[in-house]
Amino acid sequence: MDDLPIELLTHICSFACTDGGSTARSLSLTCWQLHQAVRPVRFFSVALVPNHNSLAENAAQVLASIEAERALIGSPDAGAKVRHLFITTVSHQRQPTGHDTAGPVFTLLRAVARDLISLAVIGFPYDGLESFNNVVFPALRELTTYGLMTNRYLLGGRRDADGCALYPVLERFHGYDEVLSHFEDMDKDAPRLTHLRFSEVSSLDWHWFSCGTRSLMYRTLPMRGFTAGDAPAVFPSVRYVAIQPISPPDQDDPSWRSELSHHFQYVRGMWNLLSWADPTGPLISILPPDVSSSAESASERRVRLAKEDWLSRLRGGEGCWAGMREYSRGARERDIPEYLFPPELLAHLR
Image 1 (cartoon, rainbow, N blue to C red):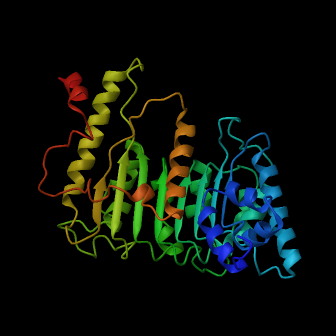
Image 2: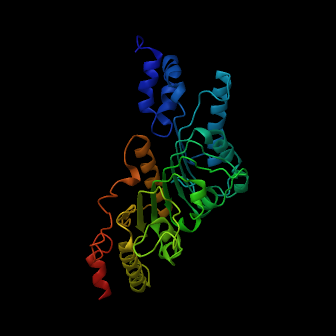
Image 3: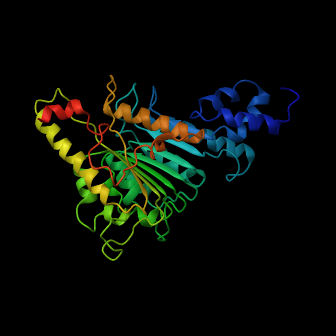
């Protein structure tokens, strides 16, 4: 290793710094040579998760390290670039940290926004969100969001003072739970979207998305029998749309049977309505609901899945975009498939 040029060592280290920062931090502490080699890629990927420290404390530490590195280089525009960022307020060690001081989190986001390629925000601090207006992400290509306030402020709730797109080159968007009602204005903020995925869509959110010929669905997906004048396109560049319905109700719920009937009507209505999508339009996939059972809470499960997808994408994998063709909605398929509503559940409705 002593005979290898520093540039080659940096290139080798770049393949290891794709886990949210722990490997880069360990390599930088190994020896002086590796410390120098890893410096250009030390902040390539950063995962902010509350542990024994709060999210705000962790964000402040990362920000201080970035600023120290830039000061050492002697330029605020050189080095210490964060390309991939994962933020969550939920962990196994702590409860959701919405009441933490959010200032360091927003300061960090503002400091790295121009360099980010992917961003996943799973639950956002509630304090001071208005101060995040007008932050533009000029290089961001993939965005994942979960949480009411996250969706509100990262999607339709922010505006650039000059009227510029906040995500001018964003190509892929993945939103969890109650995201559709905040998504309508994204055509102005992200005009180049090509891939959309909406996960754990509830019947209420689906009703908002699909109700009426001028709803977001009709303006996002070309539907047979409707002209462009009936429903002007919102995202003309979209090529893939994936929708995952929420999981079936828990059998421990006292009103399980009635909830199951409602869930069946909801999933069947989604399946039938999307059969009217124009086959020349975007590829539409209806993905299987998450039916995994574990000791995790719903929030912990979403954090785990979102982080796995985020890591997969920055390592060159498919992440949450896997299976889109496998579960594409064929217009000739009339019956609701078993993966959406298993026969054993259907038997309870007879």
